[in-house]
Length: 427
Length: 196
Image 1 (tube, chains in turn brown, blue):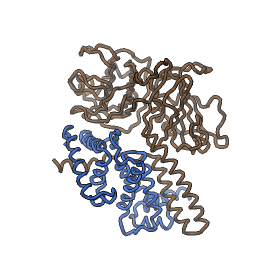
Image 2: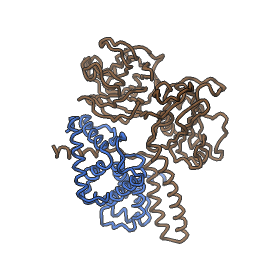
Image 3: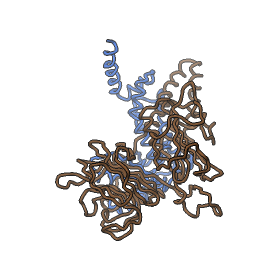
Image 4: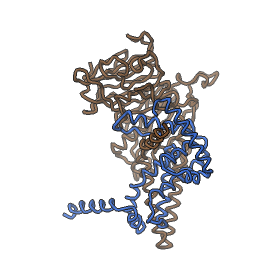
């Protein structure tokens, strides 16, 4: 047993993550700069001065890097941007009230100390490099500020493609080297969100857009009604948000192989809104969304699923709320799958629905769920892994691995209501 | 014509540099070769970062520790004895930087229950085997800093107990008993999950 444990322990190092591109880029510059500085130092007193100046600059850079990433990355977020390596996130307040709006900033470059508390981080923007991205989200209670155009109600994640390529009431911040500036205003979960996105270049590349969208996917606006009641301010009817619980977002993509049925591979996508009495199990659903191998009515046919519903997964009627994936049919994937209904005909189905979709092979399934509390991703039963925690809301996108075409997109909201978009390959 | 012919020549030169052993790269980098320094960086950066991440269990801290370590190593290339292996030297610097960073933040004893996930979600040959390894990595992450650091230094970074004791400033006996307790904890968790 001991040798088996030690063998597994040694092998587990193979699973360690890799550094991300931003960290690698910063380290490369610092390391190569260190060799250069050393060479200059040896050649002349003048070079020594230059080397010292560069060293001081790098030192200041390192100092500013360490502060935000080391502290902000540990903060929970009920409003604002969830932390992610390579990004610096700050938020101004833990509550939004009619009298006191809040704002949150996410940046892939260190925020300038001069911008402390500023709604627009001017100093950071003035020195934003071409691959720099800054997102600023302002939050107010809906209806407090009268916008010239009524705000459209939107679900998270907000889509950068829906943003306007300009910012109202703002000139060009850096006329000599113009920034790319985008704005999106929306009513989200009872709050007005005014989002400003800045790129270090006027014409950002598609990869920069994708990076900004990835961070925008991590914008959290937890509605007032899911906040713990003991955290509400007493004697006040004003909506307020709190950070008194630690919301956590699970965002995973899987590559799944559905079982074959008559020589064909297909999947069932299924949504069951909260309160619906399920056909085969007479219990009201807490709200369920999932994808399973078609026709496999036996346990363990589910591939990826959200919320509680155990009879297909564990052969029992109840299982804890959470996000689950089959270990027998699915493996993790790094392929980028957009969480969007784009390319699928609407309007979405908003009642209980199950559709069978011919896939012609493996499918990519991305699931993104905001959990009430952090939950480790661990084994659940003998054929699943899962993060067990109350699910505040979630989305799930399914694509064909071979063609890349969308098959279905599902949303499950805080009230347990569901929406399903599916393609014509589903019946 | 020059443009057409120069690209393969440049590629060949780069390939030649990439094939050079560490010893030659170090000598070239000292002499001012940016290419050699870059190849050396590419060869060791991921190892350094993973070592820092294993110790800190925090991506942001790992970024800082690994960057600090590789910068320190590159700045000290002139003093480095190139007949000795570069990798273990960098690993030691990285481990020290990571431990220093944890100490500075007083996080050496309190990093527990942070929901650390060590493992990457790369597609492997066998999902079942991947899952077993992830379960082990998750169990290591959940140990708490004091035990976790001893485990990762010994089993992931292959440091002998004496060296771990030196890095942590602890008696060797303390390190050995901490490692034994950590293994007992891991065994209990992993047996319950039918991993071992």
